[in-house]
Length: 303
Image 1 (tube, rainbow, N blue to C red):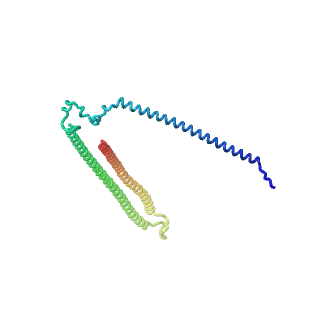
Image 2: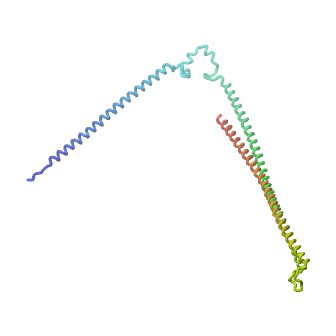
C-alpha cells in the first residue's frame, strides 16, 4: 500500500497568499466604491447648486420683466393688440388720415428728398471724377514735359561727347601733323648742312693727308676748322633748343587738350546731375500724385 506524502506547510502558505490576495482585491474594490460614492455626492451637490442658480436667474428675469417690461410699453403693442380698434376713441378716429391703416403720409416727401439727395450725390461724384481726370491729365502733361526735357538734355550730352571726341581727334591730328612737318624740316636742314659741311671739307686741305703739302697747318685752314667747330657747336645748341621748344609745344598741346577734355567732362557731369535731379523730382511728383489718388479713391469707396 502506497502512502502519499503532502507538504502541509506549502499548502498552508498557498492558502495564506490566496487569502491575502482576496483581501487586497476587496480593499481595492472598497476604495474604488468609496471614491465613486464621493464623486457621486459631489456631482449631486454641483447639480443641485446649478439648478438653484438657474431657478434664481429665471425668477430674477421674470421679476425684471414684470417690473420694467410691461406689454403696454412695447413698440409693437398696438400691432399685437386685436382689440386696438375698439379702444380707439371717436375723436381720435376722426383725426386719423384717410387711407390704409399703417400707411405713411409722408412717404412722397421722403421719396422726393431721397431722389434729391441721390441726385446731389451723383452730381458730386461726377464733379470729383472730372476733377480727378483733369488732375491726371495735368500730371501726364507735366510728366511728358519732363520726359521731353530729359531727352533734350540727353541729346545735348551726346552732342557734347561727340564734340569732345572730335576736338581730341583734331588736336591729336594737328599735333601729329606738326610733329611730322617739323621732323621733315629738321631732316631737310640736317641733310643740307651735311652736304655743305662735306663740300667745305673737300675744299680744305688737311695737313698730313696730302704727300705734296706742307706738314704745317696753314692759317686759313686752321681758321676754317675753328669756324666749322663753332658752327657745329652752335648747331648742336640750336638742335637742343629746338628739341626743348618742341617738347614745350607738345606739352602745351597736350595740356590744352586735357583742359578741353576736363571742361567738357565737367559740363557733362553737371548736365548728368541736373538730369538726375529732374528725374528724381518727376518721380517724387508722380509718387505724390499716386498717393493722393489712392487716398481719394479710398475715401470715395468708404464714404
